[in-house]
Every structure is written in structure tokens, then in C-alpha cells.
Length: 313
Ligand SMILES: NC(=O)c1ccc[n+]([C@@H]2O[C@H](COP(=O)([O-])OP(=O)(O)OC[C@H]3O[C@@H](n4cnc5c(N)ncnc54)[C@H](O)[C@@H]3O)[C@@H](O)[C@H]2O)c1
Image 1 (tube, rainbow, N blue to C red):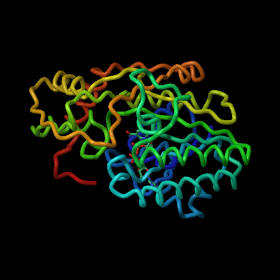
Image 2 (cartoon, helix red, strand yellow):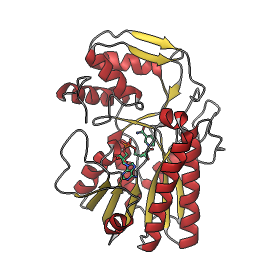
Image 3 (cartoon, rainbow, N blue to C red):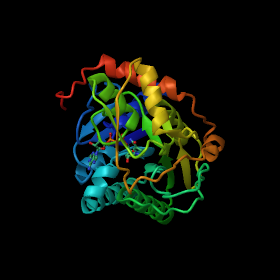
């Protein structure tokens, strides 16, 4: 298949390139920048620039069978700080991509949504795709709005759409200095000898999925014959408290790490674990990387790389 990754230089896109090339696909990537933590792989065709550049987007979409829409300009923290930018950047780039998909009659788009934010508060049981969506943060609202645009365009123009509501991916090549990805950030702080800062008492529960497991699900989602519109949760299906994550980080590093507790944030739901049975059924997929194994692999990567606090892109 001819696959286009929009936002292919980011954390998840970087892993998808490897997985899709290994699966025999022809892969093209459009991003405003090259990859951050390695040279762009030569087996992938790379185009650089903005989604908003229509000529460039048209060149990227030519001859493509499936578009993976990964481009996003905010994380939950930055979206909360500036909801106007969150809307203006992400919703407009999404509709530009959708208009391009229509122009080029691309038969299938996969959109990366957020299983951790679109549902909002939930009872302490695995959240199915049919759960009400009541996001309590800007990032979740914008992701949900983008999902709706994908659905509207897909129905109106007759292309297939897969919406993947991703849990909390982590792993190698996630920016350890970023504002997203507790595991990688904690490991980096441990490597630097810095204390780990935790919002609240550490009882917040999240569903952490190693990026290799996410990449397997995505690879399955582009080859499995999709319905016209399907929405799938992709996570580990397991809950872990931040306190458990800290203990796994300590075990992977083999050192004691100081923790500092700060006040909890209103935008964090206390509990988010995804019900992944639909993805398992429809994609013939299941996650394989146990939390300690994934944390240990990420630790090994951080130790290999030059990720001192002063290093920058
Ligand atoms: N990482 C997570 O924890 C997580 C969780 C759930 C969902 N997601 C979603 O998955 C997708 C990929 O996540 P990621 O962690 O790889 O993000 P990332 O920030 O690492 O990568 C996104 C890429 O999109 C590119 N981009 C943004 N706007 C662009 C534009 N206008 N034109 C061209 N390129 C543009 C950026 O340069 C970046 O390389 C995003 O949509 C994200 O919201 C991520």
C-alpha cells in the first residue's frame, strides 16, 4: 500500500515508519521538520513543510491509498494554556487534510485521537467506545471536534475513516523533555539525577501503551477491511497509578529517585483505562509489551542517547 504519514517526524510517526516499511508498504511522510532523535530513514520519502501549503499537500497525497493523520500542534497542557491556538491550529489543519483527501479521492484516513481525554470522567472500569464523551479539557474538546469533522467528511464523500482513540503511548524517541509522557519524562529526570514531580497524590490511573504495540495496531488498522467509519480504543487495557509507574521507573533504573508532590490539576480525570476488546476483535491485535519491559527499553534508549538537559533540536 502507498501510505502517507502527516506528522510523520513525531514520536509515533517515527515508529510507524519502521513498522510500515517492514510490512512492505511504500511510505511517504509530510512534516514541517525532520525527526528529532535520528536521521530520517532513507526507505521513506520525506516531504517537508506545512499542511497549509496546498501545493505541497497535493504532492504528498498523489497516489496515496491511506493517510495517517498524526499532525497536532498541542498537548493537553499547551492546549489548556491557549485554547484559541489549539482550535485554530488543529481544527484547520484537520479540515485542510480532509479537503485534500477528497481532492485526491484517497479511500481511507486514519485519525489519531485521544482515548485519555475525549471521554472525560468515567466510572472505575474499562471505558468502551460507546461511553459518553464529556471532555474536561481543551485538548479533548478539539480532538472530539476533529473526530466529528473526519466523520462528516467521510460520510459525505464516501471514503473510509478509522479513528484510533490512543491511550498514553510511551517509549523510545518520545521527547523526554516534553510536557507529555510521564514515563519518558520520569526516566529522563532519573537519568539527570533530578526529582520526579507528581501532580496530586500519585493515585491517578492511566493506561500506558508501549509505542511498538500502538504501531502494531495501526499496521493492522490499515490492512483490515474497515467499515465506512469505525472508532477504536487502542491502549494496554490495564490501569497503572503514577505511584506504580514511579516504582517501575525505580526498578528499571536500579536507583532510588526522589518524588515531589504538587497540587493535582483540574484537567486530569482521576481514572482512565480503555476497553480494547473492539480493537482486539476487529484488528486481530493485542498488546504484548509489559509495563516493566517497556519502561526498561525506554531507559536503555535514554542511557544510549545524549539527552542532557542542554541538548536541543
Ligand atoms: N503522544 C501521546 O501521548 C498521544 C496520545 C494520544 C494521541 N496522540 C496523538 O497522536 C498524534 C501523534 O502524536 P505524537 O506524540 O507523535 O506527536 P508529535 O508532536 O511528536 O508529532 C506531531 C508531528 O506533527 C507535525 N506537525 C504539526 N503540525 C503540522 C503542520 N501544520 N504541518 C506539518 N507538520 C505538522 C509536527 O512537526 C510533529 O512532528 C497526535 O495527533 C497526537 O495528538 C498522542
